[in-house]
Amino acid sequence: MTETILYIEDNDQNYYLVHYILAAKGYECIRAADGMEGVRIATNTPVDLILLDIQLPGMDGYETARRLREIQAISKLPIVAVTSYAMPGDREKALSAGCTGYIEKPINPTTFISQIEAYLPPAENKEDE
Image (cartoon, rainbow, N blue to C red):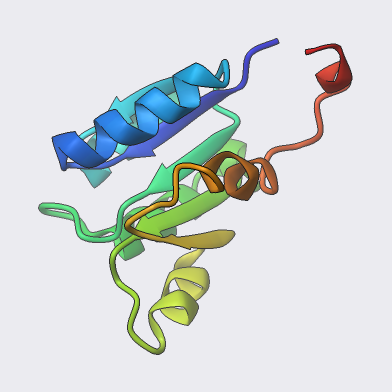
């Protein structure tokens, strides 16, 4: 079974890079261009992980994370902030808003998959791949 990852990201270049890396490893990647769309997609589409930019138009990533956590059906879903916010306290702010993890941009393409796989539930047949 292919894991589906929702990436809430407004920047086309950031999205295409992450999509390329995920697709090359067999993941399905769905995009939401802002927080409201991300909440709508996460509510209506089964996903295994949410990657969340913090600097989004309209509703920022912190508020998006809080709203996602309020939705009973997906309240336990892992949410990983993928952000250029890398000042002291930014990681803690993302985690306190409801994110499960935090990855700084620019991402490292060689380690990105292992970073996000730490938040995915172990696949029963992963060794068959």
